Length: 309
Length: 281
Image (cartoon, rainbow over all chains, first blue to last red; front, side, top):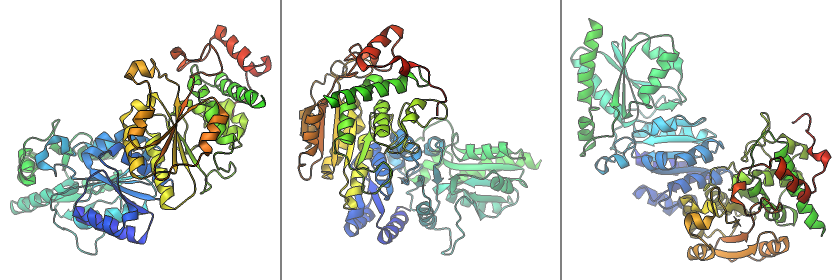
């Protein structure tokens, strides 16, 4: 996903000399290519996230379009007040890329996990929040962010995500995408963890349960009517996120339901009032924290039965 | 001599804006310490700007990082024609564009919305970098406070400005030695700034921040190439009204009836000027 992100920014920067890439001592080999080919448009601001955010906002007043990147945890938490005052309050045209979102940076533990970023950032007026689930969707989100004249935050996982979309895809900013058909229940998922929802839906299908999977790549703004369309014929709703259930996708869906005309039971799957436990691969970490596909299967089976009866 | 009265008049305008404003407190003392600095920049041919064209691409940019001194900036912007002086009388009224901290989106001539300390330098560095990319001759000026330098983000910016060789950036420190609750020295055991900024590679000048000729001379001096510059302007917080000068109690305050006399006498305020204004904008 990081590669897809950087390729997309690289392509934009080649065409539009106002596009710049800023990092806070963060990145990969791909950044080195960018720096080699477009040195005038590359700024390593050092280990100083607050400064990077503020400088990007200042630079945007000169017509530049900064894409700034670092680990989502450092960007969203440490630099929050700078994102609020310098980017959102001043409507700065800055694109903020939180890499390694969710539990991607597995073994470094909760200081490096981005499991509350949606919760804190979606309180900010005027900020668009995108959470792509596959490399192609990352490129599409970067393209959409470039078109927006204003602040955007994109959270990008770093788990070697597989592609789930065809070359000609139907990405539309603000519009959820159904990625698996089912007619008994719906699960909303966002970011890398959409893959776990997909695996769960496939397993459940074999067991006779039809779970629709909806990828919510645009977390903000979100349309109540659009969410309502997905839930109106479903007796029970699930949400899955590599994030705290409070403030994240689970809360977003609850809010949509409360503001809409249908009342449904919602089961939120994610981190529950805790920081992530354990270490290991992303699969192991998801399993330890009961947000992997098997946990989803188990939770769905335990809850859908009651509705069926 | 004429300039002396001009500066006194500007202080009076600042005071009157707060006095007639919809507020029971104001950062008068911080605004007063800044008057000569802003006056020199805007009225003595340092900044290049066009009040009728606030977004003119080649303008010099001034970021007031210590946004709480907004009244001084508003008054100077009105003096120079960015907006009508009558608007100063609307300070802090519900529909006013002039609040306690400057808002870029609403006030012509304001380059950055500030208020939270430790932002303006980083923001100004971004502007200076952007101008460099475009090979613009425009300069960036950032005014910070000495107490503000207790914010860690200031030092993130200090490193970065040197790293990016921002010789189009001038920081002016309104070094009035006081912060909200105490002196800077008593709060953080800092008595001098020159060596600290020099240690980070900056070109440092120290000047009497109330002497406009000295300020002008230093601001006009050719800049060292490839290094950012800071001018440490030694000032007196509350300068111009004796009871407010160098007095920590005046950080966020307006005079009571008894204290008002000092303002009236020392700033030459007339009875007429103290009468309630009608029809605030």
